Every structure is written in structure tokens, then in C-alpha cells.
Length: 212
Image (cartoon, rainbow, N blue to C red; front, side, top):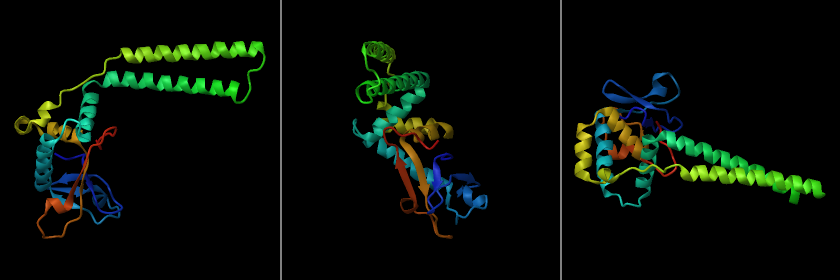
């Protein structure tokens, strides 16, 4: 369930862990890299992460940063094409603004436009750039801002029912909305895993992408 989200927390490693048999194992160790190799019973890790997810979300306040991050990631998945267009327009606006700033520096700081003809040329160039920026801004404002309804994730009963019916792939997708990564430390051979001591969940933050 956690493939792509679970990582080795051995100092200096940080590599992904994959399920091998009944355990999540550090891939660095398996390919011969210098790591003592974290390993943990997959069922225990899955159960702990699942319960943390199912109990934390319904307890969130509407303005909680985690909920903001979840909504942001979710809406990007729902309508990636619109966000790609918005990102492209934003990048164009920034480029044109940089050109305008350089042009203004050329006139007012570096003194490169002197004389009536040069000033006229500056005004023409600056007007063209400002028009371009205004047009791009108008196009950006016309694009819809997609939204999602996160309320089902805040209802404990609905969330658990949906989780019970979901495939592991679906569960992994939902976890990646709320989590950046799950880190597992090295255990002691022969000792039963205590999840609270060996598993750390890095919850999502606004403006960041998941590990997947």
C-alpha cells in the first residue's frame, strides 16, 4: 500500500523502501549500498499509517494547513490541464514583467535612452510590453479556478467506509494527498515493531508535492 511513500530513516540513507515478502525493506541495502537497512513488517506499518490517516483528517479544522494542502493537491489531480495553462500564462507574465523592468532600468538607471527619438522608441517598447502583460493577465483571469469538495474526508464514518471499499492503489493515492512520506527507522532483530517509536509520518504542507 505504501510503495512510493515509505522511506528508510537510517541516517545518511533516505532511500525508498519496497515490499519484499511480508516486509518493507530498504532498497539501498538490497542493491549493496552502504546502509544497515531498515526493514519492518508491512502489515504493521500499513495498519499504523492507515489509522493515523483515518483519525487525523476528521479532526482537522477547515483552515488547517494540512487540509489546504490536501485540497490543493486534489484539485491539481482533478484538472491538471487547467493548471498547466495557468502555469504557462503565469510564466509568460513573469517573463514580460522582467523584460519591462530591464527596459525601465535601461532608461532610468543606465541612461541608454537619450534624445527625443530614443525616448519615443522607449515609450513604444514599454507600451507594447505593458499591453502584452495586461492581455496575458486578462487571459489568466478568464481561466476557471477548479475546486474540490473535501468535506467527505472530514466525516469519519464516510472516510472509513470509502477506505474499506478502496483498492490499495486508491488508498495510496489518498494517502499521497495528505502525506509527503513515511519514514521507518531500523529495528532490533527479534523485537516486535512498536509503530510509534519507529514510524514517522511527514504530513503534507501547502505548496509542496508528494513523494510520488
